Length: 354
Ligand code: NAD
Image 1 (cartoon, rainbow, N blue to C red):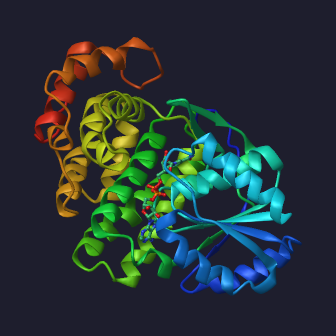
Image 2 (image 1 turned 90 degrees about the horizontal axis):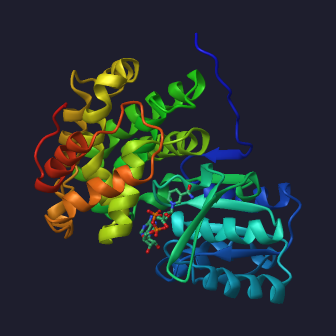
Image 3 (image 1 turned 180 degrees about the vertical axis):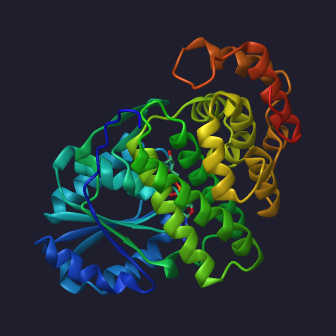
């Protein structure tokens, strides 16, 4: 077996249908008596209902969480932390709200309880990306890891089917790249395979029946595992391409990941036979890249970058940008190969090796 280093991120996970009912218990377990609830404006009513169950232990609700953790929003929330004398935060929502909880923890060391309602997986990572003056700055520090995470499937039942599909495939992308990461290790690879298996089976069922509790529960379990992968090992070509495409052409995050993943995997496939074998098992398919392309179709997601608004002229620009800042990838990056990959992703064609 090759050498490896494995770092387990700390944290307590409470998983199960109706487990939001344990929130008061978890607050008490952490010795907190004045928590501040966080949410987006869209989820404020739901967060308020959850806060109600905490009685006087909840001293307020800040409902201003926003995409990409703007520092200006964090400063508003910090003022509420000070005003209310909060001794902990409960982040109720998706990656945006959990990002706000992390940004508060970074500056105050306050304990966090995360209650995720999407499949983004941020609650499992020591990563925080914050935006200020139009720039996103990302850092990794264990200071931002939540102390407790409560996964309650009932809170995900209202996640719109389209968002469920792309958010789930975005999670799968973390686990796929974990299988061939430079810092890969056998523990994370086990977690990655299990996460991919759970999500790949659950997502088409959710697309058919968004209220299917068993499928939703499997997807939430898979998303948790894929989040662990993102938080534990480095990512490669797929994540770099999506970052470039998103930033340059303002393409939506999860949808872009969903389109690019089969193509980035097909590009890397010749260099990562072990990962491909594990993916064959996880996806129960001979051609993992084709299976991921089919999965995007099964959940009704867009499969062409042009359908997200990327101009054709952007293919060359993105290929240049993808090669501009060298980073580790299992297969050497060649411009022609990257260009072909991007062209197929742009047009919505099936993935092809080479
Ligand atoms: P989000 O948190 O922005 O949520 C999208 C919208 O859906 C919001 O309006 C939200 O209120 C709503 N919503 C969430 N759950 C819902 C539910 N169950 N039912 C109905 N509506 C619901 O989206 P996201 O994809 O979870 O997170 C994206 C953000 O998280 C991005 O800023 C991304 O950069 C960040 N992220 C960070 C990490 C990390 O490790 N730091 C990992 C993944 C994502």
